[in-house]
Every structure is written in C-alpha cells, then in structure tokens.
Image (cartoon, rainbow, N blue to C red; front, side):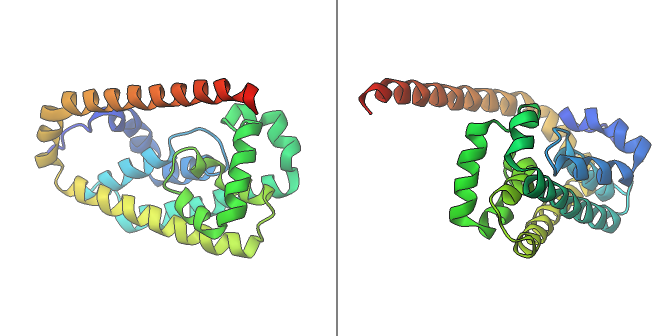
Length: 213
C-alpha cells in the first residue's frame, strides 16, 4: 500500500532521508550536538516514523542516533574545554551563543551539574550547546560522558518509540493530522505571541528597575 506523504515540516526533511537514509541521521544529529543549527532532532523523528512505516530498520536508527548524539556532544565538550570563552566570544553568535547566554548557562551547570546534561537533551538550544558549556564550566569528562550517554539514551528512546508508533499507524493518523492541523497551528501561534509578549514585558521591567540598583 502506498504510504501517504508526511505532514508539515516532516515532509520538508523527508527527501533528505529518502536519499541518504541512516547516514542523514548520523550526520545531522552529530553536527547539531556540537552547536551547528541543523534539524538533527527532526531528522531523528522522521527516521523513526519511516522505520515504523517499514521504510527503515528501527534498531539501526536508534543505535546510529545514540552514537551520533554522544559523539557530537563530546566534540562540543572538547570545544568548550580547550577553546573556551575565546572561541565562543569569536564565533558563538553564529550558533546563538551570546556571552550573556553562556554566562547564565555556566552558572546553571555549576549549580546542577549532571542533571542538566541529562535533561538538556530535550531542550531546544541547550541541546546544541550542552557539551560546549559543560566543557567551559570545567565538568570532568567522565562525569559528563555518563550523564550525556544517559540523556542521549532517553532522548533517542523517546523519539524512536513515539516516531515508530506514529509510523506504524500513519494511514490512520495522517487524515486526523490534516483535519486538525489548522487548529494546532493557530494554538501554537497564540502560544508564541504570549511567550514573546512575556519576554518583552520582563525585559522592559528589568530595564525599568536598572537605575534603582
């Protein structure tokens, strides 16, 4: 039976996966994990959906994604440990690592350590900078490796399970996605406006309090 096309952004990434297969998963997850803004998580989800639909081997997708995630974060750790603030100050703006953001993240890593490395995998922005900041904060490599591998296993396991189940029921899910896509996009747009408004309000409040400090 012919599979229906994938919805939304998944359809945009699908041609990459059709051409490169698991190599796309390895490459994009790997380079995303040391700060390069590419759709590593998205390609993992698409690959899992493909696997659930019988187009790829789901075990191979999971193993490759796990190895690429761990290796990519270790490259990031090495960049942070040996390049440090000098590299981030010079090139950080190209991967959304401003000095203020790095300083805040370093303090967070210092306070919470391994827990942050594990959870960071699920947070957009922190996932890409996680290894770099851990290296800059001076976390020991062995400790980083353990928590990084744990986070990678949970992250890959969650998305492969979710994507695999979605792929196995794609013929049922796709019509429902099409039916409610407009409502979901509208809700996301409203949420985005609220988040931006809250951010602007906080910035203005902080700026208003600054002269009193």
